[in-house]
Length: 538
Image 1 (spheres, rainbow, N blue to C red):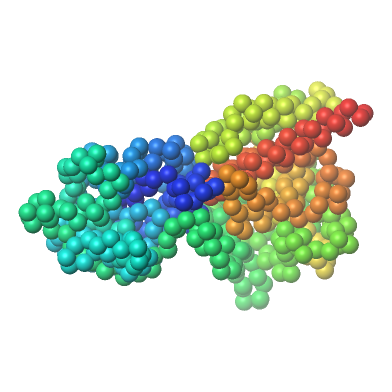
Image 2 (tube, rainbow, N blue to C red):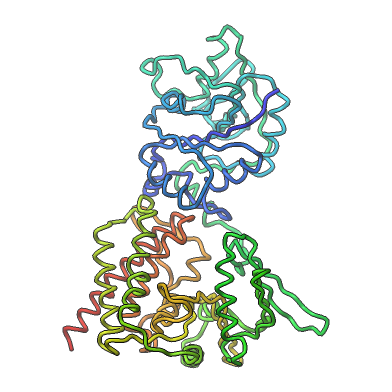
């Protein structure tokens, strides 16, 4: 009886058919509801109890390594430098391949849930040493009872690229005599090599296959997506709408992953400080519990996330909106204002705008096509020095001013009621640098500008990055229509840094990681030019 203990994903080529997107291996391409093909495969196969291995071409090894380590994906990476046919690729890394009970699948095939389940069900009913899974389609080979037939001229084969071996093939042939040998061609020859003592069987694959043959096929799939509910929370939280016997509705937010309990506990501390102050900018808090790692607050009926309102807002509505927004921020900041030693502010700024960003980007540097460590270091250093000089030295030397802050006023964390023109803040970050619950008030305004430069829709919608171009986040409000409070180079420097730092936070999507980094660096460079030009004019 056969069984599957290992899954071997083969990505040994250089992705040439993907043209300007060949800068990425296919296994890292985002899927509609999954961060990448690799995360989907690993999830589904490990769910079946198999250990996943990935053969990757040396051109992509460091990129995949960064991706796997950053996203904590349980997969063994096998480096290959041979792309002369799939059999020769596997032959070149034979000593590193799993020795037995292995399902082999090409990296450009995405098997449906039910298809994967059926493979694991069917394999135990077989005894053949090697198995070719068959499915009619546009393939160049057809496997029959009499062996393999090349049907490249009609392209009506049945070999998509799914195989099984009970024990690892010996690959005992001279590659020079068989250049560009495909794995199925090698399997077809095995019975003759072993005088029929080794058998090759077939199993019909029952399930759907999504195939990314080339760039146009992938882009059609990527953009042709159904509408999904975009009211989502982070993967480690749950959100439940609750209604009591009196009809009072509340939202219960609870952490469902113990490794992230510390984040919601910080929120609980923040809400505990403001819950009894009767602020109009904070929802009514009914209950918090660090033991349960949960927060229960009033349900904000008729309120919309700020980015949703702004997406369709008319120009004449913006004045009232920004007045409400700024009043709410000022109400929040009024909770506390204190002098802070210059050294503390400098330290927080260096953490928030320099060292933390360098560490984050360095962790995924091989994933970032436009990464330049020297340019990043110099640009962040210059921007941070300007922020410190503008925020401390020129205003309140030798002290800096800290206010009670939210810390993450993007468009999903601020809710707006167009009828009452009220703003409510949710999901606080609650720290700046190394300081808890307070910081530079400019940082809150920078997060507002961050929203206006398109973060929230960027987070929810599909975006593509290629070697030729990338789709930039869409501005919700043009710079010329921004209030003066937001349209200044200091805030733009902060926003550029926030975008750059986002690259590592969003690194499960390789397109968006690259867009965030490139867009942020572009914004940083432009803001530095603007700042220096203003300085020359004064």
